[in-house]
Amino acid sequence: MAVIHRTTLKPTKVELLAGWLPTRPWYRGSAAPVLERSGGFRLDDPAGEVGIEFLVATDTTSPEHTAYLVPLTYRGAPLEGAEHALVGTMEHGVLGKRWAYDGLHDPVLVTEVLALIEGRAPAMAQSITDTPDHEVTRAFTGPAHTAADPAPAPAPTDDAAGTHLPTPDGTVLHLHRVLTPVDQNPPLPPEPTLGHVATGWQGPADTRLRAVLMTLRKA
Image 1 (spheres, one colour):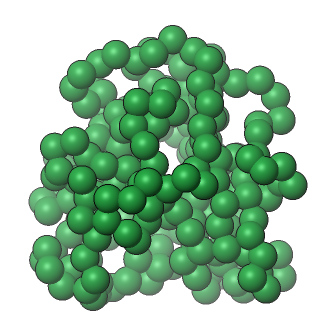
Image 2 (cartoon, rainbow, N blue to C red):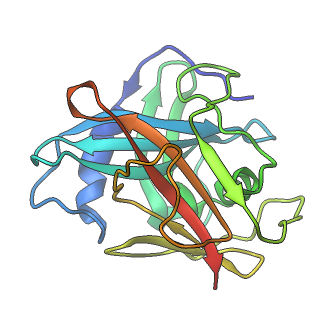
Protein backbone atom coordinates (compact mmCIF):
# COMPACT_ATOMS: atom_id res chain seq x y z
CA MET A 1 0.00 0.00 0.00
CA ALA A 2 1.37 3.41 -1.01
CA VAL A 3 1.21 5.99 1.78
CA ILE A 4 0.38 9.52 0.62
CA HIS A 5 2.39 12.07 2.61
CA ARG A 6 1.09 15.62 3.06
CA THR A 7 4.42 17.38 2.64
CA THR A 8 6.56 19.48 0.32
CA LEU A 9 8.33 18.61 -2.92
CA LYS A 10 11.17 20.72 -4.30
CA PRO A 11 10.85 21.12 -7.21
CA THR A 12 7.19 20.23 -7.56
CA LYS A 13 6.10 17.61 -10.07
CA VAL A 14 4.74 20.16 -12.53
CA GLU A 15 7.93 22.22 -12.24
CA LEU A 16 9.94 19.09 -13.03
CA LEU A 17 7.73 18.24 -16.00
CA ALA A 18 7.80 21.78 -17.41
CA GLY A 19 11.44 21.30 -18.30
CA TRP A 20 11.10 17.70 -19.47
CA LEU A 21 7.97 17.73 -21.65
CA PRO A 22 9.43 19.96 -24.42
CA THR A 23 12.18 17.34 -24.97
CA ARG A 24 9.60 14.68 -25.98
CA PRO A 25 8.64 14.02 -29.64
CA TRP A 26 4.93 13.94 -28.71
CA TYR A 27 5.00 17.42 -27.10
CA ARG A 28 2.59 19.73 -28.96
CA GLY A 29 3.66 23.13 -27.64
CA SER A 30 5.93 25.69 -29.27
CA ALA A 31 7.34 27.08 -26.03
CA ALA A 32 7.77 26.12 -22.39
CA PRO A 33 4.47 24.86 -20.97
CA VAL A 34 2.54 26.35 -18.07
CA LEU A 35 1.26 23.23 -16.36
CA GLU A 36 -1.58 22.41 -14.01
CA ARG A 37 -1.93 19.06 -12.30
CA SER A 38 -5.35 17.92 -13.54
CA GLY A 39 -5.73 14.33 -12.41
CA GLY A 40 -4.38 10.83 -12.52
CA PHE A 41 -4.13 7.75 -10.33
CA ARG A 42 -1.61 5.51 -8.62
CA LEU A 43 -0.68 1.85 -8.59
CA ASP A 44 0.77 0.00 -5.62
CA ASP A 45 4.18 -1.66 -5.76
CA PRO A 46 3.67 -4.97 -3.89
CA ALA A 47 7.17 -4.63 -2.47
CA GLY A 48 6.41 -1.14 -1.17
CA GLU A 49 9.62 0.33 -2.57
CA VAL A 50 8.62 2.22 -5.72
CA GLY A 51 6.01 4.95 -6.04
CA ILE A 52 3.91 4.57 -9.22
CA GLU A 53 1.78 7.42 -10.53
CA PHE A 54 -0.03 8.17 -13.78
CA LEU A 55 -0.25 11.95 -13.80
CA VAL A 56 -2.35 14.14 -16.11
CA ALA A 57 -0.71 17.54 -16.56
CA THR A 58 -2.51 20.22 -18.58
CA ASP A 59 -0.64 22.90 -20.52
CA THR A 60 -2.71 26.08 -20.20
CA THR A 61 -0.68 28.19 -22.64
CA SER A 62 -2.83 27.12 -25.60
CA PRO A 63 -6.58 27.79 -25.99
CA GLU A 64 -7.31 24.05 -26.20
CA HIS A 65 -5.50 23.34 -22.89
CA THR A 66 -3.52 20.29 -24.02
CA ALA A 67 -3.57 17.42 -21.48
CA TYR A 68 -0.52 15.14 -21.27
CA LEU A 69 -0.34 11.72 -19.64
CA VAL A 70 2.91 11.07 -17.78
CA PRO A 71 3.54 7.78 -15.96
CA LEU A 72 6.16 8.33 -13.28
CA THR A 73 8.01 6.12 -10.84
CA TYR A 74 9.61 7.50 -7.69
CA ARG A 75 12.61 5.77 -6.17
CA GLY A 76 14.83 6.33 -3.16
CA ALA A 77 17.97 5.52 -5.20
CA PRO A 78 18.88 5.62 -8.90
CA LEU A 79 17.51 2.85 -11.12
CA GLU A 80 20.51 1.11 -12.65
CA GLY A 81 20.70 1.45 -16.43
CA ALA A 82 17.87 3.99 -16.63
CA GLU A 83 19.83 7.24 -16.72
CA HIS A 84 18.25 8.10 -20.09
CA ALA A 85 14.76 7.84 -18.54
CA LEU A 86 15.41 10.13 -15.56
CA VAL A 87 12.93 13.01 -15.52
CA GLY A 88 14.72 14.62 -12.57
CA THR A 89 15.21 14.52 -8.81
CA MET A 90 13.07 16.04 -6.08
CA GLU A 91 13.51 16.64 -2.37
CA HIS A 92 10.59 15.06 -0.51
CA GLY A 93 9.79 16.55 2.89
CA VAL A 94 9.46 13.10 4.49
CA LEU A 95 11.30 10.63 2.28
CA GLY A 96 14.26 12.79 1.26
CA LYS A 97 15.76 12.72 -2.21
CA ARG A 98 13.62 10.96 -4.81
CA TRP A 99 14.56 9.98 -8.36
CA ALA A 100 11.63 10.40 -10.78
CA TYR A 101 11.65 8.26 -13.95
CA ASP A 102 9.59 8.11 -17.13
CA GLY A 103 7.64 5.12 -15.90
CA LEU A 104 7.49 2.89 -18.98
CA HIS A 105 11.27 2.46 -18.59
CA ASP A 106 10.77 1.04 -15.07
CA PRO A 107 10.06 -2.72 -14.86
CA VAL A 108 8.04 -2.30 -11.66
CA LEU A 109 5.54 0.00 -13.39
CA VAL A 110 5.39 -2.25 -16.46
CA THR A 111 4.48 -5.26 -14.33
CA GLU A 112 1.79 -3.38 -12.41
CA VAL A 113 0.19 -1.66 -15.41
CA LEU A 114 -0.21 -5.03 -17.15
CA ALA A 115 -1.80 -6.32 -13.94
CA LEU A 116 -4.15 -3.31 -13.97
CA ILE A 117 -5.25 -3.97 -17.56
CA GLU A 118 -5.83 -7.65 -16.80
CA GLY A 119 -7.82 -6.89 -13.64
CA ARG A 120 -5.25 -8.27 -11.20
CA ALA A 121 -4.35 -4.91 -9.62
CA PRO A 122 -6.63 -1.98 -8.74
CA ALA A 123 -6.13 1.65 -9.65
CA MET A 124 -5.66 3.68 -6.48
CA ALA A 125 -6.60 7.27 -5.70
CA GLN A 126 -3.89 9.77 -6.52
CA SER A 127 -3.96 11.70 -3.26
CA ILE A 128 -5.69 9.48 -0.66
CA THR A 129 -3.97 6.54 1.06
CA ASP A 130 -5.42 3.04 0.55
CA THR A 131 -8.43 4.19 -1.51
CA PRO A 132 -9.41 2.67 -4.89
CA ASP A 133 -10.05 5.05 -7.80
CA HIS A 134 -13.37 3.84 -9.20
CA GLU A 135 -13.32 6.34 -12.08
CA VAL A 136 -10.53 4.35 -13.72
CA THR A 137 -12.01 1.71 -16.02
CA ARG A 138 -10.28 -1.15 -17.80
CA ALA A 139 -11.06 -4.09 -20.04
CA PHE A 140 -9.09 -7.12 -21.19
CA THR A 141 -9.75 -9.97 -23.63
CA GLY A 142 -6.24 -11.31 -24.21
CA PRO A 143 -4.20 -14.09 -22.57
CA ALA A 144 -3.11 -13.31 -19.02
CA HIS A 145 0.50 -12.43 -18.33
CA THR A 146 1.55 -14.71 -15.49
CA ALA A 147 5.09 -13.61 -14.61
CA ALA A 148 5.51 -13.39 -10.83
CA ASP A 149 8.59 -11.18 -10.95
CA PRO A 150 8.97 -7.71 -12.53
CA ALA A 151 9.08 -7.88 -16.31
CA PRO A 152 12.44 -7.52 -18.05
CA ALA A 153 13.46 -3.94 -18.70
CA PRO A 154 11.38 -2.82 -21.72
CA ALA A 155 12.55 -0.80 -24.68
CA PRO A 156 9.75 1.71 -25.27
CA THR A 157 9.86 4.03 -28.26
CA ASP A 158 8.45 7.54 -28.52
CA ASP A 159 7.04 9.26 -31.58
CA ALA A 160 4.52 12.00 -32.31
CA ALA A 161 1.65 9.60 -31.52
CA GLY A 162 2.88 8.64 -28.05
CA THR A 163 4.88 5.83 -26.48
CA HIS A 164 4.89 2.22 -27.65
CA LEU A 165 6.08 -0.55 -25.33
CA PRO A 166 6.66 -4.19 -26.35
CA THR A 167 5.48 -6.43 -23.51
CA PRO A 168 6.82 -9.84 -22.41
CA ASP A 169 3.79 -11.70 -23.86
CA GLY A 170 4.24 -10.39 -27.40
CA THR A 171 1.73 -7.55 -27.32
CA VAL A 172 2.37 -3.81 -27.55
CA LEU A 173 1.17 -1.27 -25.02
CA HIS A 174 0.35 2.07 -26.63
CA LEU A 175 0.36 5.03 -24.23
CA HIS A 176 -1.63 8.04 -25.43
CA ARG A 177 0.58 10.88 -24.23
CA VAL A 178 -1.70 13.62 -25.58
CA LEU A 179 -5.21 12.90 -24.33
CA THR A 180 -8.18 13.30 -26.67
CA PRO A 181 -11.44 13.77 -24.75
CA VAL A 182 -14.48 11.71 -25.81
CA ASP A 183 -18.17 11.94 -24.93
CA GLN A 184 -18.50 8.29 -23.84
CA ASN A 185 -18.63 7.39 -20.16
CA PRO A 186 -16.79 5.16 -19.69
CA PRO A 187 -14.53 5.95 -22.68
CA LEU A 188 -13.90 3.16 -25.18
CA PRO A 189 -11.16 2.79 -27.81
CA PRO A 190 -12.30 3.53 -31.39
CA GLU A 191 -11.39 0.02 -32.59
CA PRO A 192 -11.07 -3.44 -30.99
CA THR A 193 -8.11 -3.99 -28.69
CA LEU A 194 -6.91 -6.71 -26.33
CA GLY A 195 -7.21 -4.30 -23.44
CA HIS A 196 -7.41 -0.66 -22.44
CA VAL A 197 -7.47 1.75 -19.49
CA ALA A 198 -9.50 4.98 -19.33
CA THR A 199 -10.35 7.68 -16.80
CA GLY A 200 -11.30 11.33 -16.37
CA TRP A 201 -9.52 14.52 -15.34
CA GLN A 202 -10.36 18.12 -14.55
CA GLY A 203 -10.94 20.28 -17.63
CA PRO A 204 -11.47 24.02 -18.13
CA ALA A 205 -14.35 25.79 -16.35
CA ASP A 206 -14.99 22.92 -13.94
CA THR A 207 -15.68 20.43 -16.73
CA ARG A 208 -14.84 16.76 -16.38
CA LEU A 209 -13.05 15.32 -19.41
CA ARG A 210 -12.58 11.62 -20.17
CA ALA A 211 -10.35 9.64 -22.51
CA VAL A 212 -8.71 6.29 -23.16
CA LEU A 213 -5.23 6.49 -21.69
CA MET A 214 -3.64 3.36 -23.11
CA THR A 215 -4.44 0.37 -25.28
CA LEU A 216 -2.97 -3.12 -25.48
CA ARG A 217 -2.79 -4.59 -29.00
CA LYS A 218 -1.26 -7.49 -30.85
CA ALA A 219 2.27 -6.81 -32.03
